[in-house]
Amino acid sequence: MQSTILHISHAQCQKGGEPLFAPVDLVLQPGEMAVVAGNNGSGKTTLLEAVAGLGSFCQGGIHFAPDNNRDSWLQHSHYIGHSLGNKASLTCLENLHFAATINGIRTNEQQLSDGLAQVGLHGYEYHYANDLSAGQKKRLSLSRLLLLNKTFWLLDEPFVNLDQTGCDWLFDCISKHISQGGAALLTAHDNKRIHQQADHFIQLQRP
Amino acid sequence: MRFWILLQRDVLVAWRKKSNIYQPLVFQLLIVTMFPLGLGAGAQTLQKIAPAVVWILALISTLITLENIFKDDYEDGSLALYTLSGMSLPVAVIAKAAAHWLTTGLPVIIFAPVIAVLLHLPASAYGILMLSLLIATPIFSLLGTVGSALIMNLKNGGMLLSVLIMPLLAPVLIFGAGAVLETTLGNTPVGHITLLAGCFVLSLTLAPLAAAAAIKVNLE
Image (tube, rainbow over all chains, first blue to last red):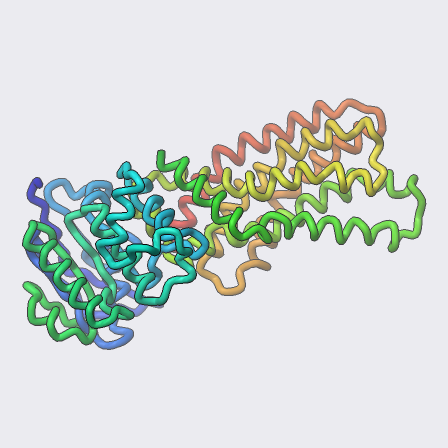
């Protein structure tokens, strides 16, 4: 894997013309995890969306080494936000197949089933995403991460809605990804364990 | 490959929720049955207004379905999935428009003769009616993507969408209904059809770019 680094330099997002938080600086390398914390409404989601490429910064921005190209950043990152990106009227298998194909990855049904089994959705292949519980929907979207195999994971409150085993599983999953040379930038407002593990800790402050 | 998977997914989603497909048709049928009742007139009056009514119904019934082209994707987060996949946005827009046409425009075209029969449209005009709708319904879908992309993050954007898109669709209605009308009067519809085709080419080239820009603006 070629060395890739994400620089967030002096970045600030705004809402309604007012800056949301004091400027943020971060250098995130493969093998590291960064956690963004802050109160409700402090701009965690806005920051993560802007980093993912869904929003914009009013000041500063991100620089993606080596080539600072938007396309190569998109190729190396995957974002899972509050809206999980599952289509309610498609089955788990179809949702995962779409996510893989739209990201340019060819898969067969066996790989997709394995992907679902990895997140504990074995036996739900042909269930509609609409019929899943909130936690299971979360698991379905997290299955994308494992299948797409991107370096940078951008996760917005990934632990919300997961049960205890789910949280443990996700925690192990992120640790494994980090140890294999991946990187994760996530928001978690109340998970102490992930706060302690983080290489970088960003507390969003009022500007 | 990305184009096809997005098209395929959208058609599948529409197929699973069949009300999306038959709602415009039922809407047309309900309104067209009101015409003879309201007008209280014989076949001759109906024949006169038939080209306009068939066309307006096709237009309005499509209009009510445009809002959801991007709104659903925006709300469930799957818009982020393809905008962040590195896929070219205008290509994604064309895929969305194509899927919308397949699930809305095509049924409307197939259903148009039924509406036309109920209005006693002269038999000679059926071919041109179908042809004009075949050229025009993709325009509805393409311009619809622009409107839908503009209002996707608004709660009650449906009305705004209609107001935004209606003026753009007015020329399409004029040429389309005009072509059918000229045929019923025994004139050649070639001029109208050619202009309609011009509108199609124009919207095929410009609408995807405009819609892609609108998506970008709304995501920022």
